[in-house]
Length: 384
Image (cartoon, rainbow, N blue to C red; front, side):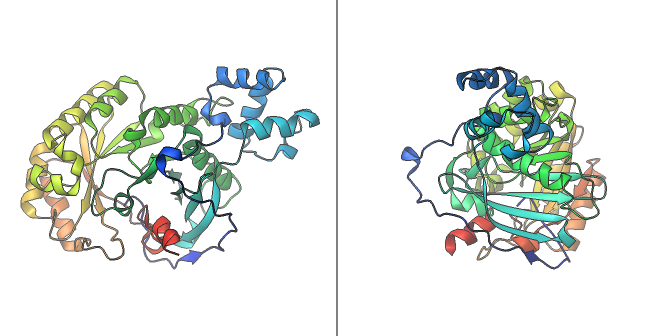
């Protein structure tokens, strides 16, 4: 549900040629090839030495990938010609192949469906604004959380992404941004949100390592600010506490979607394990340890969770907490019984929250015309 677009006509970019790879069962699925972004700087030096090269070549390779956003060995002219193909082949294999691309909002919003090495499909979105550029990335192929109004949740989980498969989505978009792909927007990607396909905290170690690659200073990483990274979760309580212990300054976004356990059990099935009160206790712990306000994500679903009394209950639950509410106009999936709340209902819901002293925003609705809800484009590709 994370990315939306209004009013602008959709542009579907040409379908790129890709080689279909037969899907395998999860137990037999081979892992992705090792990539530079899977490794920390020390491990990169070891990997380069194992290839018979001097260790400082690892920093050169990192500078090309993270600093110059270069992937073509021919452009790595500071590396000996005899070494370029060997180093790039071993440590910069192609992880993502664009299977389909769509654009809207005058080209400022671009969605890409990626085919991975084993045929798995994931989606990510690049969103440009006059003052910033944001990448919304996936952490899993599919999702195992089974939220019934979410296209990805309906598809189920295929597998976790590797650290490098996550990072490479961002680096790819950083390169597109630097080349001026988004008209009227800055030429530097500045923000990343883990709100694409999958539950990030269910792929904890790789997401954490991806955050470090994205925020490590160049040439070790992409050099983004930790404060410009947002990690979304449906409320995996132990993982929220664990993330707080990492002492990172990333923003936490919790997909609550209902203030009462009866409804949240249905909308977010993991609530049957960790109830609303436990999730909000974890929110308090995260905010207390990091000093960062937590975003409470709330998809507005017509006649399901948009009642005035639920707004009042949510206001009481959040009053005094270091949190704000981000109301999300639902992007309905094809054939779904779920629909977006009317605008007047959305406005009244927001008014009641603000009256309770809770800071409330309504998410910019981008992507509706390009199968904006994560999982829709992948579902369409599979259907064809």
